[in-house]
Image (spheres, rainbow over the protein chains, first blue to last red):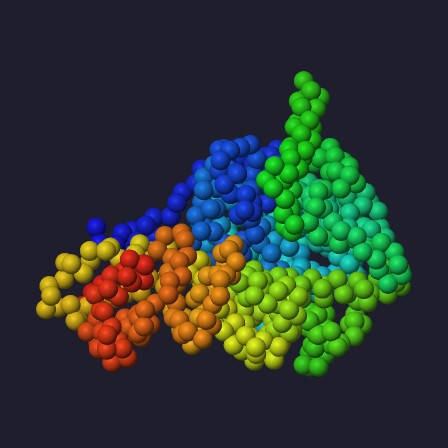
Length: 303
Length: 261
């Protein structure tokens, strides 16, 4: 067959992937350097999460790797630069790329951040904070409506980690997030490390935050490591660095959350100073053990 | 609302203004808890933005960083990030103008070949992310009647790219991308690069003399006869058969036609 025709045929026939259940599973960030180790171990219990933007190139090894991983595992697609919390209209071209990835890889979970990264023409490559006001609430809801209309499914919105507050804010973060979830019907991605980091940085109680958080809407949990710095007054300022193991305090909060909302799919994020696969896998196994123990306790209580 | 009021109410504009401009003060719309200051708090965002973008350039240009050393590279990249922050949401598109910046960077003028090494690295990444396509089969030209060979038009492979250099950019690139220590390189020898990715591996080849003229013509859709004439004009000893075979072998094309498509 003519090579040009063959390549067109291949392009017209998108890969179909199995629908794999994700409930009660722990997962890890998928990092290309772990591909050989992951594929070498065959199908494993657990899921993988990828940053959507890393798979927005036209072709090449990234897509080949993701196809291979997706064939055997449920996938979570995590967007990092939609600027849902931004002031400008969503980038239509980016929204289309995001939707195309959802169609192509059929992820079990799709999430984005309560943050912004772009203003005017500049992309800052960071998750920037927003004030919590009626005006920003309305705009965030409008943006989420647009994303959910495009992807034909609920989006999970992730609570941010922040280092400062806006003087113009008129409501708490949990109030804001509850409002977004109620108005848009979106689900929530509860990042427990972010709760811990923000609680320290803003001087509130992480447990109070979790009590105010609409836990019934949580469809995924994130766990990660953080780093320490000092603020202007010399007090501890925690940085959401994703560069080390999950801390004991975050594990404790995780146990509390799971006891309240059941074995929600839980991801261990690790994005910098990435360790060997066995280390990351062990972190996920620790989360899985907690999810499984809770599952057993629930069955025992029901029996 | 008047434009000025809009501007004043814009948290994003006010927050963003100082993010990559160290000369600006912490914006007044942010605060720490209970009246605490927000200078170091705001600096976390400044640091995240600048450092992550420098890291992004380091990921695209590892050979450049290996040549200059990490400290030199990061200082150079910081200037570039502040002068030309990304305008695309996709970091895989960032840094296209970095080679041109390197050319104007005062401290790099002792390494006039550095910008071309960067151009090869940028082309390498573009090839890596390019659309997948089956390369033209090796015997494709054998099926063309000899009298029609001059009319053959090639379709370039989406991953194929050319970088021309008056310096030994291909040799310097290769030496600094591999783990081996480079031997002595005569940087003044002109070298043109052909970058392809016929399957999953990106390959950078050194094109023979006039090969770049020939291939640039073919990739822009000019028929084989015209492209060969241009190459022969540029280098009378140009070996058409060997060059076309080498380029097909490298995966520079996906298909041929007779210009009717």
